[in-house]
Picture 1 (cartoon, rainbow over the protein chains, first blue to last red):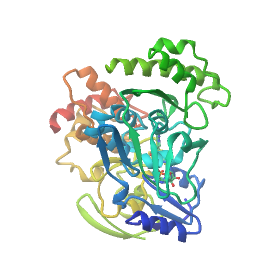
Picture 2 (cartoon, chains in turn yellow, red):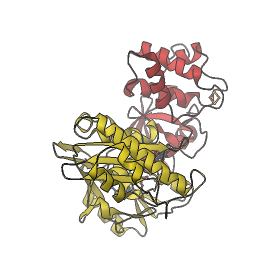
Picture 3 (cartoon, rainbow over the protein chains, first blue to last red):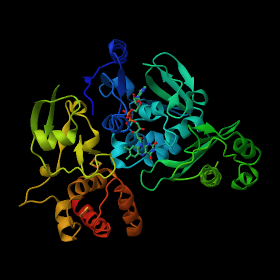
Picture 4 (cartoon, helix red, strand yellow):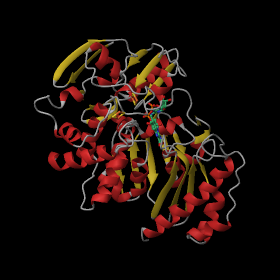
Length: 268
Length: 159
Ligand SMILES: Cc1cc2nc3c(=O)[nH]c(=O)nc-3n(C[C@H](O)[C@H](O)[C@H](O)COP(=O)(O)OP(=O)(O)OC[C@H]3O[C@@H](n4cnc5c(N)ncnc54)[C@H](O)[C@@H]3O)c2cc1C
Ligand code: FES
Ligand code: FES
């Protein structure tokens, strides 16, 4: 690991100031993606700005129609939070499937979302539930947030403060994990709202995206069988040693079917 | 950089380079060599310690993240005369062979019993949850069977 100057600001204002006065600053949340990257010397910031002492970035606020989660909320907190489990159980379920216990005890929602790893789980929830990302300068809809491989709408130095999730009638997430890393080879979140069905897909493409054709079919009839007639084109899908693009497209269909079956088993 | 935290009940104030990992701080600066490095790529869990009571991979924590924290390592949970119930169970169940993964496995297993909601009336379901709960720890010797036995046994005694 190259050397860097360490900062531990106590407020969002201070963190933004640290970033502005650094040559090449980088925020760190849980470090579960960033520290491995630093060790491999794939990143060499002049200044590392640890977000861990900023109380404003923590906290979970649960209302009947909206769940708001601070960027520095650890995956294990989301997985075990009684109010999230009651109002938005799909998010707690998803968080419990990220990596392993040790990673969940350090990793944060903001870090996962800012990173936009093509195989990360939270992006499927943001897109599938239609979340809003609140940053230090604006609000960004999930549909616009994830742009490409490790690329988001965030501008340099922009800090994610919190993420707001609308509460659906019911929802379910299914992923096909890589057996070694537990990252999603393909993951699908299906959410039924009063006026819409949303499908968020991760793992398959360069970043999380909505399955519009699946949404259309499920809006007509919310049933696993509705997916049988839907084409999932694999153009632009990831292809690597874990799975070909064609296989990922098939996994998207299978995970979508399972998610719909789970969702229906949750009553209405 | 200066960092102050507590290790196994003892307050420590150290001055270390900012890019020091917790595992190197323990092994090289504090001579606590019970915590092992198996991979250094955040995958094997051999380096697991408790940070404010929760299991973390000490190869993936930086010194600065420790400010004000409480760290517990394998050296801090028992003594040869008075083993922790999890250590006792690992010995009784023959849950180790080479022993390299064992410190991390024990630290992860203790947290699993404390936070992992692994209790229940169906032993097969509990065993499955123990296996899933330890997915961050790799063992190249035992085949895990006896490790799961040990965690089941210790869980009964820890409650
Ligand atoms: C062994 C292992 C297995 C894993 N398995 C999975 C898995 O199955 N599924 C999954 O989804 N993830 C997985 N992960 C990744 C894990 O979830 C990370 O915690 C997460 O991707 C990054 O979160 P972090 O808080 O650790 O962020 P960091 O590593 O600290 O930061 C990641 C990036 O986000 C930026 N950043 C952090 N916070 C903010 C903020 N508030 N505003 C703006 N930018 C910010 C940082 O600058 C950095 O570029 C795994 C990781 C490991 C080591
Ligand atoms: S040495 Fe830390 S996870 Fe392997
Ligand atoms: S006992 Fe040898 S690696 Fe686990």
